[in-house]
Picture 1: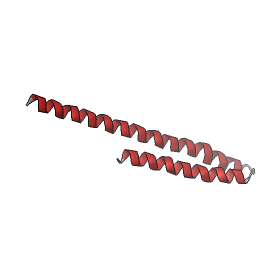
Picture 2: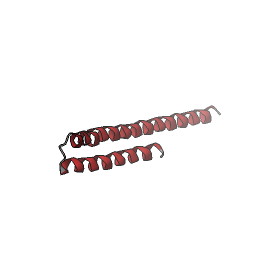
Picture 3: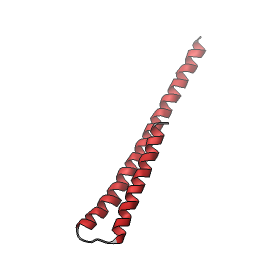
Picture 4: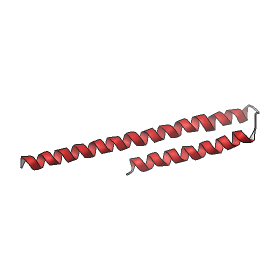
Length: 81
């Protein structure tokens, strides 16, 4: 009986480590989403707000929104796995 309970304990530890690893990786992608949003979207909005309206700024805003969505989606999928 001792061997079976030891195996169950090992399985439980492995599952817990995998869950922690998934959560950490998911949080990493959420952080990447926040960083890309801040760098691309907020930075470009500030440029547009200071009357430096250029096509490049609007392109950066759209790319920033897209990249933020992709990183958030990846983080969500990893955590919900």
